[in-house]
Length: 452
Image (cartoon, rainbow, N blue to C red; front, side, top):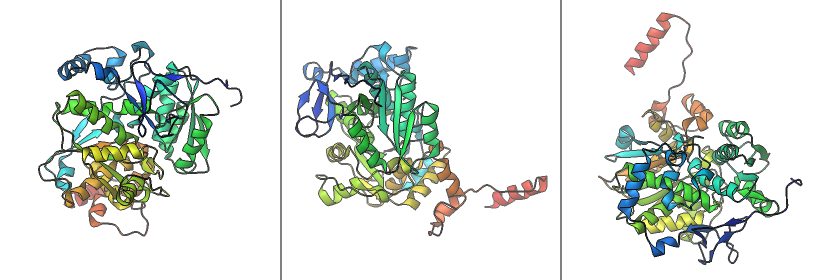
């Protein structure tokens, strides 16, 4: 990339400031690595204007409701419709693909399986590129272009690369994608390719890709769009705003999210705390994070180090979206767990596969990483952390078609060759049946299925 200019565009605040999550240092500008110049910890965005005049909660609710009737591009976005709580930018500068506006589904069958009276799923896989990443990417990409960057880049297990490439293309920027070779779903990789990204498959894992990216952004004018970027988390926090609006501002008892690099749980937690501060909600729900047993860095960090020091792991799970062993936002996530009284739990591979099929049996598909939420809920109910009568929201982060190989292998019985399978999981398998092309063969199969 020697042809790139060596000058570095400035990422400077207007009506917001960058605050270090550790030492609290406030600054109007952020470096390329989005870390504190004093202690090198992560930054978050804060709004000094709220210290002077807090927006009135009723006025905000009414404004957001009225914007649903507008045909303006920023109002058609389920992220920018909540722009009163985002960094300010002119409407015409926004890069949007009409992200957000994702459905809240009730899951009656899964509720019975888990042992709760009512269960809902906020399905972020219904975003333009089919994952929750779009909610943050619209904001981060917008501010990247505003700052004058021609190149944006990310390290990814798949969903981030797809989202970044789409928003870069929409905004007239170039995208560089760093992904671990052989550890990414081809469905996700195909999105980045189709959106025109320069895609590099590196012989390392996600954490190695991210380390290389952080070295790159201090050497070249390339804007980092991983969740280390606090603009990403500002966009992703609108998931919680939209969820509470869909619930008519009635606060659920629990919100359960998958845990990978932990930007999503951090963003949703930030939104909940801000909504409480602004009077939009009167109490906080418990926000819990569920990880795969093979990629359980936060679980071990909370259990073995009290959330004070990250315990890295060598990640291994078929839920590729959360196959991360050194999560960047672990400290933010740990604080959210403590602030909301949430739990941090882990689930095994067969538990994930079974939960995914159970969600699918509701007619609502999701990628494997999303299914850790239902698998984790079952454990939290058994532990009596989730009490009878409490309302639970699962955040599904990605669409079923993000990883179709997982689904096909599960239903064919090929996902865990040689491993024991729970009877409940076996009963969920629906493998395709090869038949002779005769009416009798089809009728016989139909009658057999009707007896089962």
